[in-house]
Amino acid sequence: MLATAWGAAVVGVRAHLVRVEADTAAGFPRFSLLGLPDSSVRESKDRLHAALRNCGYSFKWDRRLTVNLSPAGMPKLGPGFDMAIAAALLAADGELPTGPLASVLLVGELALDGGLRAVRGVLPMLLAAREAGLSDAIVPRENACEARLFSGLRVHAVEILTQALAIAASGNRPVPREDPPAAALACPAPEPTPDLAEVRGQPLARRALEIAAAGGHNLLMTGPPGAGKTMLARRLPTLLPPLRPDEALETAAIHSAAGASVQRLIVSRPFRAPHHTISDAALIGGGPSPRPGEVSLAHHGVLFLDELPEFRRNVLEALRQPLEDRIVTVARGRGVLELPARFQLVAAMNPCPCGFLGDARRPCRCTPGQVRSYRSRISGPLLDRLDLRVTVSALPFADLSGPTGEPSEAVASRAVAARTRQYQRQGRPNAELGPGSLRRHAALDAEGLALLAAVVDRLGVTGRGHDRLLRVARTIADLKGCRSVEGAHLAEASQFRHFSPPDE
Figure 1 (tube, one colour):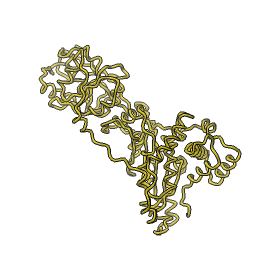
Figure 2 (cartoon, one colour):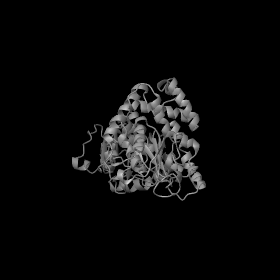
Figure 3 (cartoon, rainbow, N blue to C red):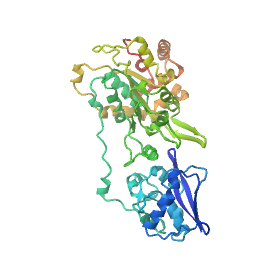
Figure 4 (spheres, helix red, strand yellow):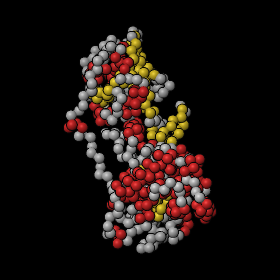
C-alpha cells in the first residue's frame, strides 16, 4: 500500500516541501530510503523502530519497505523528517487514514521513547507550508516559541509521537491551545539595551554614527585601544529604525535556518561581531551543506568587524561582492544558492600594530614600514566601499569625567526622520541609491560642483568613491531637512573620506 505525508527541507535560508512517500509490500525484509538522504536521515530507521514500538504501534518490519523523499534531486539533511516518515509508514500500513495527511506538515526528530525533539529551520518550513496551501503544521514542543512567531496556518506544538499522529489523522483538527503565561515566561528575557549616552566625548565619531544610521552607510573607525570604537559600534542598532513586520519575520527565518534559537519576534536589528579568526565560509556562507554566514545573520542589521586588519585577506576580500549586491551567491556542483546580505558594515582598527600612532600620551614604537604593512592588509577596493571613515582619539580625563552625551533616543529620532524622508522620496536608504537616482536626488549647483571637483582631485577619489561621497552628502542634507544638497553638506561629507590619522 502507498501513502504520503509532508515534510520540509531547509536549503540555505529557504525551505522546500518534501513529499514523503511510503510503500509496503511482501518480499524479502528490506528498508530502502531514497531521495539523497544524509547520514542523519538514513539513521531514522533505527529511531523509528524503537519509537513506534515504545509508543504501542504494532508495525511489522519483516517485509519490503520503501520510503522516497521527493523531489529526489534535492539533498535531505537533518533528522527533521522522522515524524513525517513515521506517519507515512503507518498510513501505508493502514493504521492512519491517508486523507488528512495531505493538509498537514510534520516536522520533528524522534527520540527512542517516541518523544519529539527540536529541529532547526522551523520558521522557513512554516513559510513553505503556507505557500503550498497546507492548513496545519505539527512541530516539537521545544520549537513552540519560535513557531508562534508565524501566522497563516494552525501550528500544533506537541511532545510525543502519539499526540502528533492523533492530530494529523483527525479530519477536524482542534484549534491549537495557547500555553499558559508560565510557559511563555520560559523564553529568556532580552538583554539590557546599550545607550549612546554612555559614550562620553567623541563628537566627530558620534556624528559619523548618526550619519551612518540615517543613511545606512558603512563606517570605519580608526583609533588607539580603549578609545571607544567598540562601544560606539555596539550602539549603532539603537539608532536604527525598528524592524518592519516583514523584515522581522525574514530576519527570524534566517536565524532559524542557521540553527539559532528564535524565541520571540525580533524587534531590534541584529548585531553580529565575529572574531577575526573566522573563515570565509563562516563569514559569507556556504560549506558542504550551505548555510547562511555572518553577513546573512546580520541581514537588516549591523555586521561589526573589530581589529579589521587581523582578519585574513581572503576573508575581507569576500566582503566586496555582498557590500555591492546586498546578496551572496554560493555556487556548488548541484546548483547556485542565493543568501540575503543586506547588512550595514561597521569596522574598527588601530592606527598601527602597537595601536598608539598619533596618541599624544603614549609613544608609537612602530616603524613606517610596519605601519604601511599593517594598513596594506586592507585593500583599496574594500576601503573604497566604506562610506565614512573617522578617527577616534583617546579621551582626556576631562572628557571621561564630564557629563554624559546625548542619549540614543534623541539621536535615533533624527536618524529615523531622515530615513523616512529617504523612503518617501526614493523608496530606499541613500546608501542603496543607484547612479541614476543619485544624480537626480543629489544634484549640485555650480558652487557644489566646483567643491566636488576640488575634493575629488585633492583626495584622489575614485568613481565609486565619488558616488559614495554624494550619498553621504545627501544623508547630511536629509538630517538637516534640506530638499537639495548644498556645499556645506558636501564639505562635511568630504571630511569622512580620510583614512590616515591627521598628524601622520
